[in-house]
Amino acid sequence: MNLVFAGTPDFAAETLRAVFEAGHRIVSVLTQPDRRSGRGMAVNPSPVKRFASLSGIPVLQPETLKDQDLQETIRRFGADVMIVCAYGLVLPQAVLNIPLFGCINIHASLLPRWRGAAPIQRAILAGDTETGVSIMQMDAGLDTGAILMSESLPIAVDETAASLHDKLATLGGKLAVRTLERLPLPSCPQLDKGVVYASKIEKNEARIDWTRPAKMLECQIRAFDPFPGANFVHRGGVVKVWKARVEFTETLQRTPGTVLRADGNGIVVACGEDALRLLEMQKAGGRRMQAAQFLAGNPCPAGLCLIE
Image 1 (cartoon, rainbow, N blue to C red):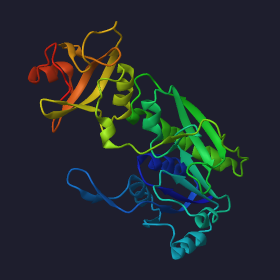
Image 2: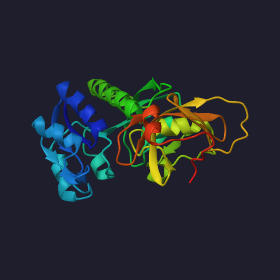
Image 3: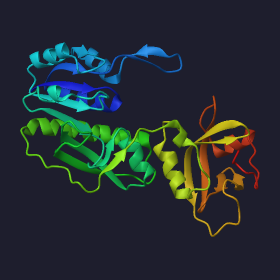
Image 4: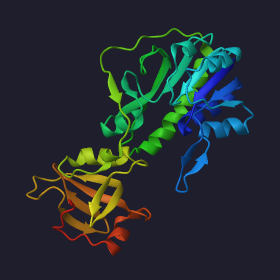
């Protein structure tokens, strides 16, 4: 089958790899323009562009898909279908209408739950126990198209956004290949009930609010690993928390944010409900370290308040 692929980050590159290795003819790849990234802010190609270039697939990097000349270029490809995965640009109806089987989107949630930009992080943040991948026939709405195929995946109790991303990326590639093998497929309209939007993650969401229940904070820490990293301020500096676990306690007569005890097994901090044992942390400009290493240079005696 001839197809055009549109995607940008690592998640999309995994689907591109799976489709390419399945033997489908990818006539062109659309990906976002090269961006500055990393500590040196060098201009870097997207993961999708890197894979396409190494595989000899022609690459287009338009700023918008509204240009009629570009649309005509896509039309001349004569693609049977366009696979879209975390592309980052809106597809106008004129583009959606070009391929024989339309445009198919690979989305990292069980739609209609978690439509939008950050379904992986939002699922963990909400304490969901299950998520998955949906293959959707695209329409003009935001992740509103009819479902062609889906598969669920449990969210482990220690799941981070990074680990769940990799599992869903692999699953997305497999489902994309399976979908292409079966086109045309009957579709099922999304339900009107259960719609939840996964808005983009903002850095200000990463600050730990000790007045919240410990379970919610533990979900926050896992959801924001690797980005932006849940954090609190200690002695004027930002400390990121990468691993923690809930300590179920009886009612505490301690102010949330107060250190209850600290040793090589972790720093136990009172929360709005229960307590949180901090196991792995990182100071600004430093490396990740276990609690014992952190305490060696950053004493946290019982009674210390971590709210600044």
